[in-house]
Image 1 (tube, rainbow, N blue to C red):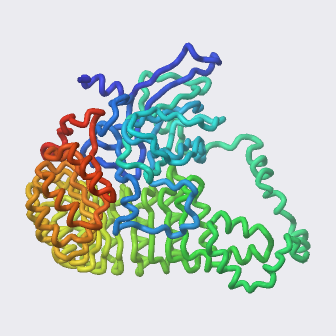
Image 2 (cartoon, rainbow, N blue to C red):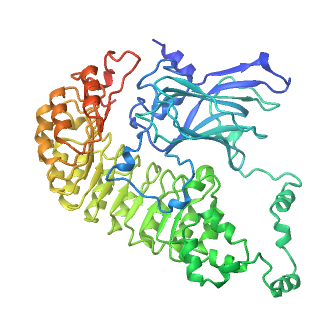
Image 3 (tube, helix red, strand yellow):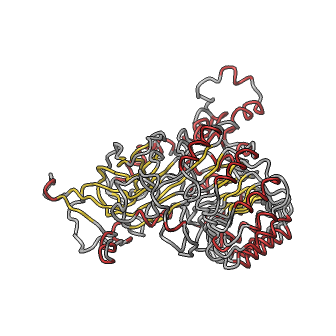
Length: 614
């Protein structure tokens, strides 16, 4: 076992390969992650380090061992199961979707180097990495992109060929797509190898100094740099005197001939253009004046999804779009605005100018969301039906959202909302259908939230309480009033795990997804009482439910004809031989069984043996 000093020193591990240097002024440096700046989701909780992004810091803890270990970083999803659940969300602009879509990301801080190699230590279900980005002085640069893959049950160090940069970086961003993975992927460490910049002053320890390599002030413009940018963008060609501009405007349209398009009415062309992504619309605007006018028509900007362009969207983009978004109804700014690329007052101004008709708004993982943005949403969008603010931290005025009256979906995963604010929002939005308050550590009485749902939201379809440690059976019983409930996630709600009798209170016959991970008090009797009311059950997670036996699983597999996913990982009453037999007997069901090493008979992780708030 490592000593405390060894663990602490490993978090700041740094290795200088002095014997490989090619330039006396530059050394090749190998370093592991020093700090994790941001992430969109994690399997772990905010009050523990198990399965959290924090575990990416320092050198590998498990590699080359293969299996499920709490010392790794694990994300919340795998496969396509979450996309098939009742709570699944649709893209506002599916035509905007990248060829290789990504679902999660991680940003890690490093010492500034010219990157030569990035190595990702994958210790469980590798193959989900699809992009690696590096942060430059003012923008993000793509180092590598590839298709997701599943490479089998073996650990690996993935080091794809990366693009060489002429600027140093100390910030990496990794994007993942889990659609091909049979189970959760786990990352043990990330290694960045690169050339140390010349005249680098060595420090005793590799601590994080945000102002040292990434100054908060705007970088100075070198002599001639601005002119070079203007020439490269051909901006100078559009700058003419007023007389020349009038002469240009007087000339007939000299763009390429439109052929039969000229015979089509504008309405027909607009009907075609509405299927174009944002980039294609911008290109159409450059064809000629006719297409320019049509490509800027506000009818094409009712739904805007800027998430695929997170790496290049800056505040000025919102200013430009505000001229076109006169009838904006759906807006997705998720992932945008990192490293002060978007300031909150630009968002406030954009919402005031273009957001009065908004019905759907997503700002997941957005740093620019503050109290001013929250208040503006309430003031200008009274008809808002969907509001997603996943992983938004730093806000305190959550209670203002109670002024909204028409919410159907509210996603507050990993936010700082408190109990009073959550309860008030629910009370004033009786039409709420989807709610996610998973990992909301500031909600100290989740029972009050559940009771409010049962008393005010009869049309509730899905609710996610993931790792809500204050939720008890008293709160879950109140959900019995929600007759249309199709999805319930109470995984790792340990205070609710003393007994599973509350399962008998779940009413209706619409339940499709039920996650009970780590609720060790749930037993066969509790599940049998649920079976008659769950004929449509498709996903059942029993991970770490110790008392469950193979007998009740036999009944579940036989009676739930629509079942497609069954997780019996770390259920120590179920043998591996029984799982193999089920897989042959029910090939249409994906039966999951995790393990911590190549030896499937290894004892379960202690985390699953007893409830703990750690």
